[in-house]
Length: 225
Image (cartoon, rainbow, N blue to C red; front, side):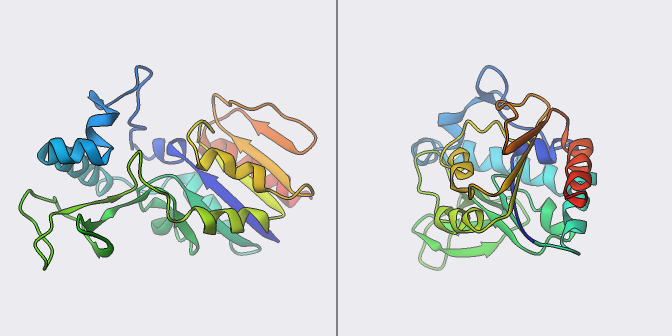
């Protein structure tokens, strides 16, 4: 069975990764416009690089949680494709084979002069670290105001899914939040989040729990189909 999974920050929260944005809209005390936009990078590249260097260091210290591992087990019996809004690599480290990163990857960098010039990067990016053409390396992150290159591929995955599982996302950030609308009418939908923004209906089952317990409940429901 083809299963599409959309994950957000709540998926990795139980691994110890902060969800960044607090209720006041700040990310680690920073206005999102200062650390997650091309304009912010142009104004103060050192600040932006430091922000993501801190996130990268934190990522390298944590491990996949039970929810990541549970989704990896699902691959044993189904054709599973994960679409994640997260920039961490915890799905991959858990053993998930098909992972599409909508918003980029923290352990990669690309040239500020050519977004197609990408390399693996697991250390700090420093001001003055430049590509062979002299352009500053920057985090391989899709910032606010930038196009989401993987969106068409994500839509194709959802359109062909018999089951769509949504885990740990507010369903408020577009274009990712619109992916659910592409699920076939016959598909079964599951939404796992401790503070769900959606309500259950004939097609959608909402489980108001954290990822580690909620994903296990979804897998039991799928096994009973």
